[in-house]
Image 1 (cartoon, rainbow, N blue to C red):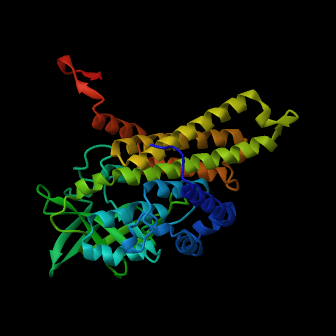
Image 2: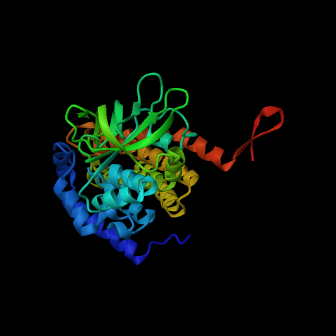
Image 3: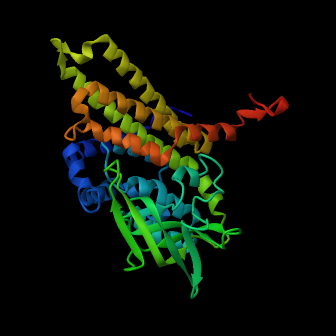
Length: 397
């Protein structure tokens, strides 16, 4: 792998950074999260028209740009750096790849151009479990992350040649405003059921109810989605192995989420460096003290390591590498934003200061996309790091 970015990739990152610096400052972020959509729709339209962001990793035959995971990771890192509230993660990083990989030719031709143009946004609904569980990043994805128990989850049944879904999910990224819901549901009963994915249009009064929830991280809106015999369309062929398809998407999805977390860490670090340069204590800038400089240097190294891991994961596409990169990024974001709060002193925990938003984003991401220890354990298991030794004990190879 050549670790240097190409001229086109550098230009893409620079253009994205300039645009976000102009249109996504702390005041703009606060206004955006307070809107009904939870993001600035005008900014999202401009990102779609001027940068082709929603279709960056979608094939040209469907109206996309046709770039790869590395380019998407680059722009997601810039989005994380400013805590951009947008459908980027839920739609571009998660929903679009699922439709592209699992959808029938007719579904891809119908939906991907709308997603690529930014005219349609999506949300992936997992009634039980988390995204890493569905992608087999924290263990085998043959469990009940789609429901399927005696109670709870989302159940699917046939109805007049179509499908109906019944159930609810409590934490859905962008679920309150997405125009397309990708719903994981169980069909076939308790003992022999299997997981299927469905397409649900939310414009079904009385059958689809969406409520925006109060969440730790306002810049990543979440919602409760309730389905009451909602009409649904099966995504992909009926015989598709949904867990296998999702596990195959673990590499690109996790690497992009990791890159966004790296951006969050870097954004918090930059704000902290700027603060300690001007904040004085005992008649001199706080940043001139050796202990502070050492802490910042260590954080800088940690961010660079996490960035390298995220880029390599995006380039390789390997699920085990992406799981490790995601673990490193989440851990680094948590560490850096925690240190940022400490180095800002009392002002760091005030509502008015933006650094607390970075801390909340890092904490929320670890809950949504972790935990870190399970990501690493699964990657180690997949790589065969541990094997059964004499007497059944685990030995490190």
